[in-house]
Image (cartoon, rainbow, N blue to C red):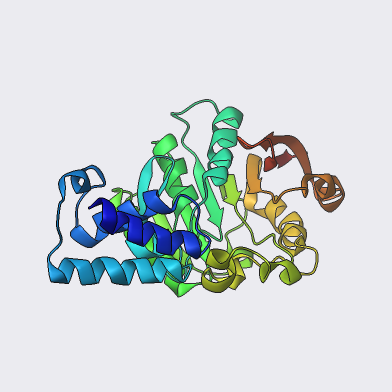
Length: 277
């Protein structure tokens, strides 16, 4: 088994993948329908298992995201279904949930939660788990993404509290949310093709492209959020690295005030918390 993993790991490393041996073991586990730990006792593969493992390693060597290959990604300790057509949830996005819990410390609060550009549903599902008396609406214009969001909502027993709707942000109901989340597209269009291949080649461009300077979505949100929030409502938005400096000017005159900009674990200003003035 060591030689088997070594060959696959070498193939992944040659393709520029970090932690190649660990990923090779995860691919082996997926090929066998086993847990990672269960592969430790495997000493040989049947021909069909070897073929499946080789096919998975070839996909990863082509830099297809590991989450697309395995079909799952964990967010806020919740397993989520993901795949082509939906953005892969990132650990740094969990900062938005942390910021919301700081802003609304009452876990029993009966909140109406909105998620603009819900993607896999990761943020809304995590928020509803964190606030068990809340209800939520996730909006997205991608049918592919919404299919994952709906499946994830069902998997986490949230069908009675979460709705996922094919709609543009601008069609969200007025004065309806106590808490709005959004992880908008915030990468400049020219930069996307220079990102790691997993992102540039595979993830949906519409979920990444924030226009010439990466800030188009925030300008749109500055005009939209004030009419979506209740009188004491708040919004929590994800920021890209270095974008915090532009937020004061973008939201000036919007009727919203910046309450907090919370850094992620790497120290990058990541979660922008806004409230009505």
